[in-house]
Length: 142
Image (tube, rainbow, N blue to C red; front, side, top):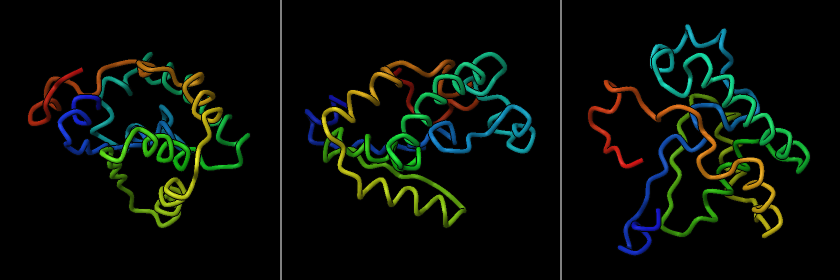
């Protein structure tokens, strides 16, 4: 993110709600059978998935306390990272699209950002972003 800012390049934030982890209704272990991609994705493997749900439960609680959908809060947070950060959420749901749009309308204070960072500190996700096969194509930087 910092390198993109220094170079004047855009950072396209793909899957900005963490494949449902940063939404009000994340996919639960029993729902993984319906999503082959996630069945082998390291962040959704047994152990990692439960740990990620536990961490993001705190984020969902914070979003509810703030009166906002979790997805909107995730998008709003991303938009505070700089004008060079472009979230591209994907959805088949009009309700989910509305939540993403709501994120563009939120204005987060320094206190809001500190509260988000406290519940989702840098490096919070357990498991790699992709497995070995899924890494074919995307660059692997971290």
